[in-house]
Image (cartoon, rainbow over all chains, first blue to last red; front, side, top):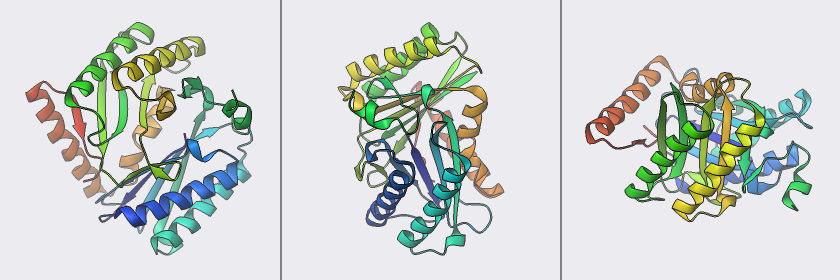
Length: 125
Length: 150
């Protein structure tokens, strides 16, 4: 967690995907303080998207903890700009939806996920 | 009917392992969560399309649906049992296994997110993609597996 899925209208290539995944990981970690080990990015090709979006991003992220509205808005805006830059698109061509659910519903490494902002202690367990 | 969404890398596991994992998912769900019918949906992501921690991913993601307000103690018991049993079948490190048991309301929001961003034609095309794979799986008596790309 998080899991970002990116749906694009056409076919993607591994090199561009890697560049986009790196930027998403950077932005997610810089904005939320989460460790990069948590960040998953998945690409899906040839999806007929609605509206003008050429790339549609859904992020399933932990809610609660230090994740207030301001941080969530900042994360969304930073993602749009960075993904657009990495993909060579205009910001208006990238749509981002963030879906939050409680950390206590998920498990990684055989342990229930930490609340957002409490990752350091969890990683040192 | 409840659902489990599984996301793995293409060719990460053998057909026999996937069949065994599907049986495992259904057995542990019945033991720990509910006797309700469970549909397991496998998405197999092609190489170059799944990254974790800046690198090609080895992670498997399992998201299961439960009733709203499911008790946390039972949720932890289920996820713990699933992590141990899954790892025993696949040999995966637990760090490469992301599991979630999600209340029905939030699960629907997540499960519908793919359709929500598609055009009307896209939803029809995606539905046909899933339906054709479902038909093939039923005819062969095998797990429902498909690529999330169209």
